[in-house]
Each structure stands twice: as C-alpha cells, then as structure tokens.
Amino acid sequence: MMQIPDLSIQALRASYNSGSLTPAALINVIYDCIESQPLQPVWISLVPRAEALARAANLNFDLPLFGIPFAIKDNIDFAGLPTTAGCPAFAYAPQQSAFVVNQLEKAGAILIGKTNLDQFATGLVGVRSPHGACSSVFDSRYISGGSSSGSAVAVASGLVTFSLGTDTAGSGRVPAAFNNIVGLKPSRGLLSTSGVVPACRSLDCVSIFALSCGDASAVFQAAKGVDAHDPFTREALPISVAAPAAWRIGVPRFDQLEFFGDKEYKRLYAETLSGLEKDGHALVEIDFPPFSAAAQLLYAGPYVAERFAAIGSFVKNHLASVDPTVGSIVTASERWTAAEAYQALYRLKALTQETAVAWKKIDVLLLPSTPTTYTIEEVLRDPVRLNSNLGYYTNFVNLLDLCGVAIPAGFTSAGLPFGVTAIGPAFAESALLGFGHSIQSSRAPVAGKGLSKIADSPLLASAPRGWIALGVVGAHLSGQPLNYQLVERGAKLLRTTKTAVDYKFYALTNTKPAKPGLIRVPGFEGPGIEIEVWTIHESQFGSFVAAVPPPLAIGTCALANGDSIKGFLCEPYAVGSMPEITHLGSWRSYLKTLK
Image (cartoon, rainbow, N blue to C red; front, side):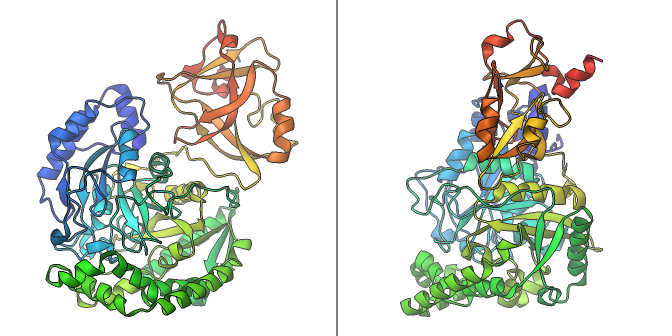
C-alpha cells in the first residue's frame, strides 16, 4: 500500500503541478489506509469511495482547494450521509449540505467523511460518544480533546488535509492543542452555521483544523461568505488590530495563571513567552479575572439553557439514548428563568466593557490553550470537573466576541503536545494566523504526529484600520530605487510572500528606473511572483497612486493563500515585445542576471 504523502496544501499543490500525484490516486491511498483500521472511533460515516473518486475526476485544476481532502464533524450536514451529532437515535438525512461544505466543495475540496464528537457537541474531552473515545495521536491513554475529537485526530493522523469542527466553548481549540495541529476559531458569523446542529446557537462557530496556519488561512478564505439562510451570519468589518513587527502580547499576571498542578505545561508556557520576548515582542500583564468571570457564564449560568433550546426536547424524550453526562447537563439547564437570562446578559455586557480596557494596551492575548491534559480514565472518573478545568482559558472567547488560533508550541518531557492560543478582537483572523505561524515555526515545526514540516507560509498579515495593504513587486521593493516613495509616506513592511500562480512577469526594459510588469492570465500555472506587502495610510494612498506612471496601475492582486490586496499591475499592451521573466519568480532574481 502506498504511503500517504505530506497532505499540506502547499505539498499537494506541488505534487499535482508536477504530475507525480493525482487527486484520484490520493483518494485511493486515503481510503486504503482508513479501511485497514477500525472505522471508529475516528469516523462515524464515510463518503463512498466511488463517489469521492468521481468528484476527483471532475474538478477544475484552477480551483484554490483543487483535490484537497477534508472531513467534517458529524453535527454538520452533508447531503448523502446521515447527521447524527454523535447520537444514533437523533440521526436524520439532510436534503442539502451545510453552507460551509458547499463553499469548500466549490473551491475544489473533496469530502472523505464525517467524524466522531462529544455527543451534541457537549464537552471538551472527546469521550462522550457511543462510538468510543478518541485519544491523542501521541498517547492512546490520553484524551484527544473535544467536542471535535474525530476531526482533530483525522488531521493529526494524516488522513485528511483539514477538517471542520464546531466551537462554542473551545471545541475547535482544545483538540488542536492535544494533537499538535492548528485550530482556527473564527469570529462568530464569518462561517455560516446553517446546516449545523446547534449547541448554543448565538455563540456557535464552525472551526477549522489544519496542519499549519497557512492551510487554515486558505480554508478560511474558501469557506467564509454571507449566507442569506443564516440570521447570525455577518461580513468582516475593518479591524483596529495591526500586525506589527513587534507585538504587544497580553499575558495574565503570574498569580492569575492556572495549570491545576501541571508543571510541564507551566514550563512550556513560560518558555514560549520567553522566546517571543527574545524575538523583540513586548509582554504586557493584563487583569485576567474579568475574562474568567465571563467564562463562568457559559456553564455556571443561564447561557447553558441555550443548549436546552437546541436539543432539550429530544434529550428529555430519549434519555436512554443519550450519554449520561450530556443528558444531565442539558436537562439541568431547563431550570433557568428568562429573568436570570437577562441578568446574565447584563453581566456579560459589563464584563465586555471591563475587558475592553485590556485591548487598549495589547495587540493579542496569548494564553495556554489548556491548563493541563488528562487520561481517558481520569476523565471517565470525574467527567464534569475535569472538563471544566480544560475550559479555563477557552470558555470566554465566543461570549466576548473574540476570535482565536490554537497553535502548537512544544512537547512535555513525556512527549505530549502543548499549545497556546492567540486571541484577538473580532475579524482579526489574518493577523492572528500570521502571528501563529511564527510561533509554530519556531516551537513545533512538524505538524501532527510527524506529518508535515511547516514551510514558509504565504500569509497576509492584516493592515490596521485606516491603512491599506499594498503589494509591490519591482522598483518599490525594499532596497530598490523607488522604495523611498513608500517610506516617505510612512508605509510599513508587513511581510514577503508570493502572488497566486496565474501571474506572468515581464521586464519593462524601456522604463527608468527599470520596472517589471505583472499580468494575471487565468489558467496559467507559474511559480508565483515574490511580492512585498506594505501598509500605507489611506491619507497617503491617493498621492502614491497618482505618481504611478503608465503602463503600470494599481489594481487588485491575488496572493498565494487566496487573499486579495491592492498592488502593481501592468496594462497588457505594454509587454508585447518585453522579455518574460516569470520563471525567475522575482524582480531581484532578474536583476541578478544583469550583473
């Protein structure tokens, strides 16, 4: 049996481009591997192999997720497979797939199957399922984390490139931490929840598990979109979170940290912070109790009654079919009154205002993803208290309308993974993914259980509010003759990345100083062109654009990770007799050929 290759998006694209691998061949290898093992506890159901192969044979090569295999948590609808939410008695046959699944299939991704979960997405442990408990891929004695247990394990064990989970209290972050992968919990409403069995509908998010921040970014770009059938959906707004060279990193005061006696996790968190400080970032102490007080509202207050609104009637009528811990949580939540719900809402508003103080002095809040980990046996003996411990650093995030990225950050002396979560205001996903990439690259550069080395990722760091991301490819690059036009306007370099592959690059030999011409050619497959992403204040943008001479113009450039920014393009008429330098991949490489 052929070994499953590196499943990162970048590696698969390279294999597909070279012809050394086809989507159909990959699908066969994945199914062979799955069929050689017990289906459960990771999988609840699979798309028939023939159906996945038929889809692989009819994909457009130009799609951003062409041939990328993925899985979904079994509380997310896929037309053709039952949705069970981890409870066979609840199963139904959806007539159409969830909005996010449709988005990903339109982008070229291939669904493999549906994964195990803590029943009705109620838990952070991954053991509350009639299909069995998923375990960490690093030690079968330890929990995988939940509720999106199977989704995380499917990625970490190398069966799919990415997967979808859901996250209400931390279910898209805890399993990522326990399996050495990335978990993106987007801002509420950016990924539609139509076609998702609700847990707490006003707080639920569809989450993304991936091998790297770059992969998570590409999937996020493909999956998001405004859904007319989801009243909670929303578009991203401009954000005030910058992606500076030096971040102001919020950390709780030492006496406010909690590890429940886990000295290894405490050590790894301190090492992560120390490394970031050495890299030039600033650590800023914040007052954590207002955040933890908000977290308490989720399960120790009337917000838990929203779970009863979602599935309470079914649970009351089918208690024999429901996990005892899940059943007790849901049925107990019926006792809360409407008056108490309003009181909790008022309390949350006050805590939101109180925590807002911290965001005036920090760019990101960096916390342990979990304070500790537990064995499956320990959780079965004490299911509620230990589950609550795992949510110490996660439960407040959706309540306070924040977003977060769980990032691998090292291993204990026993070989168990440790992770941190970068948390920011709503709509700060791009900035957090860029920040997370730097942590993963230095602290845990091999994803999952030795699956994929984390390559330099073409992530776009977000521009702060009032600033515009601008891509330059030639004479305005750092050190080049026209770079001063950016510098004198106060522009700042964010990062260097590549364009999408469908750009051709020409040397405009009749310009002074010499400049390149960048032209998009749909269907063309090139190496991508090196591009620097700068931010320029909107008050300076107009004068900069006015100084751009023909045949160049400022238009919209597509980056390798699917993001779009403003950047230099060339009118096609001007390149007719000019030398094409696409194969060189960058303006600097071309200039070296002239020496």
